[in-house]
Length: 202
Image 1: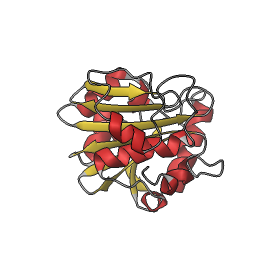
Image 2 (image 1 turned 45 degrees about the horizontal axis):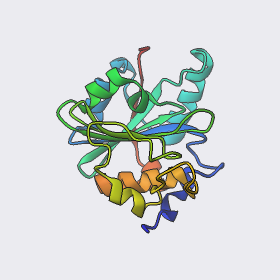
Image 3 (image 1 turned 135 degrees about the horizontal axis):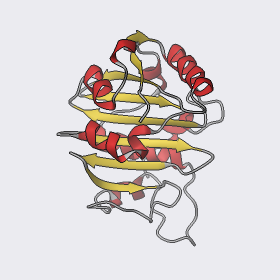
Image 4 (image 1 turned 180 degrees about the horizontal axis):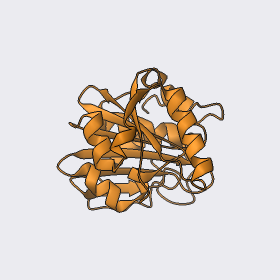
């Protein structure tokens, strides 16, 4: 089984991303292009630290009744990593996902301890596979079994409700994302300077 322990920091209670967040990996686009496709207020685009992004997201939740509108993006190799503290636009909202993935590839992981988590792999608007890491055997998409072998390697090989639950569903989801993208989403990414902005209301 693939070593998922290096992603365990994303599922701990003391994770800097807390218990609700979205992280997406977008191939071949710059952070500015990703933010523009996401539909941010371009007047709010500026460089910031992760701590500043997190603070802005928390403030926007108070202002907009739980809607954390601030997002941050950073270039890592040939991918842009989009971080949504307390958010989930790319993973959950089809219109946003289609815009962001147009002509390219997007892998998204959403942790939501009070609803459902989600893993979704999209190519040019087409959802290849989508599932809740807690019940990875309930998959949808145009090719839901494309990553079946890799899913088993990272602890997402559950086939029925009678099988044991994944040991660490979030770490496993990020391990699968790493296999697809080649990006190791480590704490060091949060130490990089992000391009942040406020997303407009959908």
